[in-house]
Length: 251
Ligand SMILES: NC(=O)c1ccc[n+]([C@@H]2O[C@H](COP(=O)([O-])OP(=O)(O)OC[C@H]3O[C@@H](n4cnc5c(N)ncnc54)[C@H](OP(=O)(O)O)[C@@H]3O)[C@@H](O)[C@H]2O)c1
Image (cartoon, rainbow, N blue to C red; front, side, top):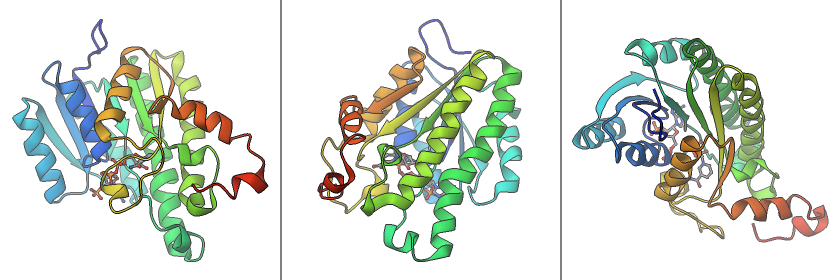
């Protein structure tokens, strides 16, 4: 159970190799040894994540997880809960993809929609069932500012994040009466392997900084946060910029 000061004892990371997700687990592990379940595709990245967390004193379990294999997701979540309660589940998997391929190549478009939207819904339904039974805990959904207003340069990814964000916003309301908190996190540009080689956007941040925002949100039961925090005001302004001006902005 999450203790009186907001520290969990167990974390499930869906997207067990995500740099933002792993930074979040490390941030929670700084205060106490955790039971960690990493749900990810097997490979050297997952092995390295496991070794690093074990070095920090965490007990680590792994569950094979492929976001495109929708019919396995209920079982993935069931396996994650088999070893006991999960206090915090972080939905961190995602694919940035290539925007130009995303609207011209149906296979790539569908892959982005499946990983970023359909799979986050499918895992979200399975998580909701388990957390409802448990009657406590916190689900953290890593969304993106890209979903707040679609940009020409990134609208396929943005559209999938908009859908994901709306689903978890609804889940926030649905699970509140069951004692479960859902937190939507909207990062801006984060330096991680997802954005490697790209020019950073204004207010670019790091996985560690996003992790600090997540830890604070879970501890204080916040339901919607931006990372970094001032991104909230930037997006609030950008939402109202008229289209002819918005399309000329260098973003
Ligand atoms: N980086 C940014 O600028 C930024 C900004 C806003 C929001 N976000 C969101 O933050 C989340 C974490 O991203 P990150 O920055 O930590 O990037 P990351 O390190 O590249 O993490 C992405 C994760 O998604 C997993 N993944 C992708 N496709 C998958 C699939 N088919 N099945 C299972 N796992 C799959 C990756 O697994 P593998 O290691 O197996 O590929 C990896 O664990 C994502 O949802 C992303 O959309 C990122």
